[in-house]
Image (cartoon, rainbow, N blue to C red; front, side, top):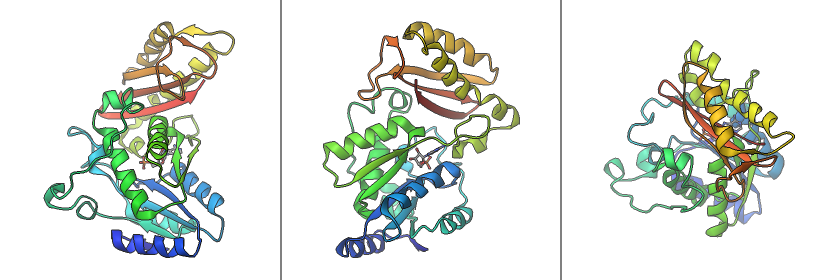
Length: 286
Ligand code: AMP
């Protein structure tokens, strides 16, 4: 497994592969890898096959964090990540630093951003106003550096995947996006690098996100229900976990991400819940 930290070296490798018709599968991550990330790597390998190349990036992208968010304390363990990726048979890990990605003193040599203007507005976009601008910008940069034929993203970040799919279609990136299912802990909590922040009590109560999704699934199994009514019920349900503070729960069309008035089977649900300073998200197609 090769570890590459400069953009020119990564592009040189990718162009060499392109010239020989070698397929490139790409999984962008912020590191502190768990089984959810590794399932995306497995998927990338399945798609490009043995003769293809799998590239994983590990980069905690500062432009997608708000000023009051957890950039400085975001969990990192590069040594452990590299070991896991090596065991998975990954070909290249791309690990640039901030000076490489955003040149100049604290990024002063960088001034071009990519902004999706519709799907990025509600939910995560409303709670974290500069988040998706950072995501679409860094993903564009990574696509231009790794030159993938296929890139794999997680359903765990449903809105992110939707925004990136839209960006790829709108800006004609010559690559395919695959969205892979959410991996969960035994009790149903979606795996996330941020779960590490939770203390024992918060961790025990964090399963409320999954239980809320299940409660909504059950509510719409036989009949549709008004979104306002279901939101109110779920708000009560979630705040029954004393350490939980609901940020949002939304019901929307999975294609347009527009809110729906009536929730039924096939409606997409997403929610964000704080435990202390830790913000967890989850979603499901009902
Ligand atoms: P992150 O390191 O949090 O930026 O995530 C990198 C990629 O892994 C994103 O495409 C996420 O959607 C995906 N991912 C995160 N958690 C999970 C999970 N529990 N199951 C599957 N994919 C995930």
